[in-house]
Image 1 (cartoon, rainbow, N blue to C red):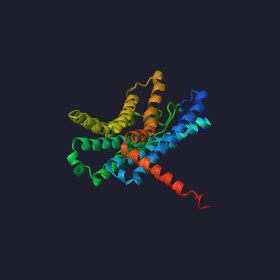
Image 2: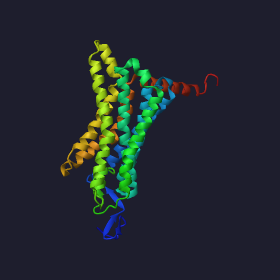
Image 3: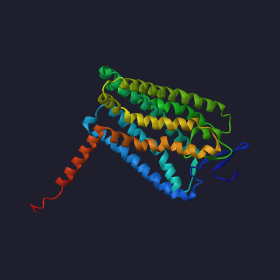
Image 4: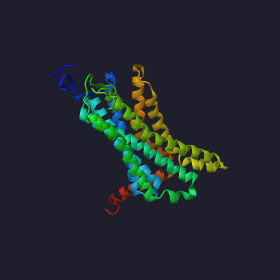
Length: 330
């Protein structure tokens, strides 16, 4: 460690880190341009697809239902989610500059962690909404009203941000020293905590407890909801009825499976050098792939969304033809 390096400052008898190096895919220099183009296409498609979903939900009155209100919130969250991770990855791949200041790293960690927590709660709320629609259809309007829906959604955003705020406040008071390399694509909490100079036991323990408190309940609610949903669907006597009931929740079930499946896989994999690349790839599934496929899954598998999109495109085409000059009149 060189003391004249701008990434370090001398603090007492220790050299404090002022910048981190996100290694990312640094060991694949020949693929940097290809990876940049790939992530650029993914980011543009993610923002465009989720923005289109938000516009459709707001503009089409047939989509002014509670389910699509949740879907609009999910699309807004996915735009923020991908914008927290992908622009920094794109800049690193394009310029080759992998450094990030400590303050920027902690800021990225705050938004990333908060949005992950929010998505856990929002997916749980959406699964509960589907549970009421399928298992308690006669009580749906009374139980899932607009006020309750707004409270659920606001609570999802609040709880997601609250959990990470406590950890980030503690980490912002820490001094980082030693190696300044983070072998990841973004500022992940565990490798960041390990770079702290002081006793990290308290922060590690607090991070684990808060992760369990704020992510385990929504996961259990989601799991319980779908166990009840599947049990109810299997009891429907007609094949047509089962297919219709399952089609109302199949899109959300696919998204939940991708998100929680990869998130839990990354969390449960042991920290070994041989699994570093695998953990990076799996982390891309819930940070990059899920925001990308959400609008595709919901638009392709949802009849109301397809009809709203078709109507919007038809209206656009008619406006285009109406704006053209009448050649016969000329």
